[in-house]
Every structure is written in structure tokens, then in C-alpha cells.
Image (cartoon, rainbow, N blue to C red; front, top):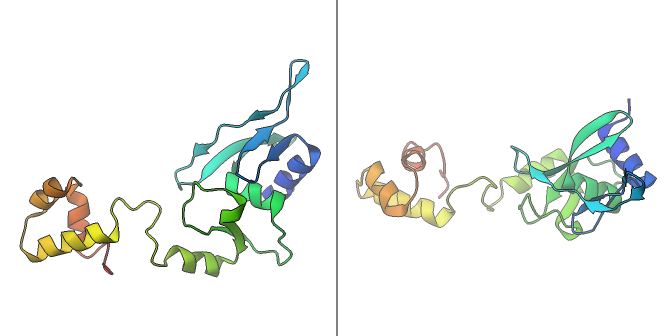
Length: 165
């Protein structure tokens, strides 16, 4: 059986699908007796990545849009396994924002000083919360005052999150 990347490349090469440099995946499937090119509507997976469903003779597969863009436009002579979003934004699938990387490079980039894609607050807010905790304010008071959930405050208070802030 072909790898997922090979299946995606074959679909792009066959003309059944295309993708723009801005990350819009287009279906060139026949519908009825007309050949219609239509952009596919991506959905966001639980991991925060934009995905589309592509189909070939082996069946349907959910594909990350950034991977489809990379396979189409970026050379990968070194066989690098992962794709990094340069600005850290998982929804920005434009060619100028992605690059092939090793697993180690991708992990190092994800833990740099940029906020995590799923972070509910930023570093400034975390510092403010820590200051209020140091002033012996209660978690409910802090949460209500800052418009956040009590669980965010409690996670910071216990040192589970935002240890570096």
C-alpha cells in the first residue's frame, strides 16, 4: 500500500485535485456531465490543523492542508518527515509560512518563546495572574476580574502551566 504522502502526490499529479500557494485545495472532480473545479471546505481537526478529505481508489483520507501545499510546492530532497509553520499559526497554510523539518527541529520551534497554538492567555496575562496570586487574591476573584476561567488561575497557582512567565 502507498504511503499517504505518495497518495497525495499521485492525486495532485493526476489533476483530480490542485492546491494554491495560499493553501486552498481545489477539487477537479466530474459532477454529472460537467467538470467542475471547486475549493474544498477545510475543517479544523482536534490538533488545530486545517484538514480536507481527498479520495482515491484506496478510499477517502483526511489530509492536513499544510502537507498538501508542501508536497505540491516544496522540494524535500533530504526526506524530512515534518512540516513547520514558521509563524506558529496552524491555520496559516501559505507556502511562505511552511518548511520541511526534522522532528527535533519542529519540537524546538514549538517550545520557543511563541505562545502555544491552544493557549487561552498570553505571557503578559500569566504574569498579571502571578502578581495577583502573590498579593494573596483568591482564584475566583482573579478569574472574575480578568474574564478567564478559574481552572486557568488554578493551573498557574499550582505551577502546572506558565512556569516560565
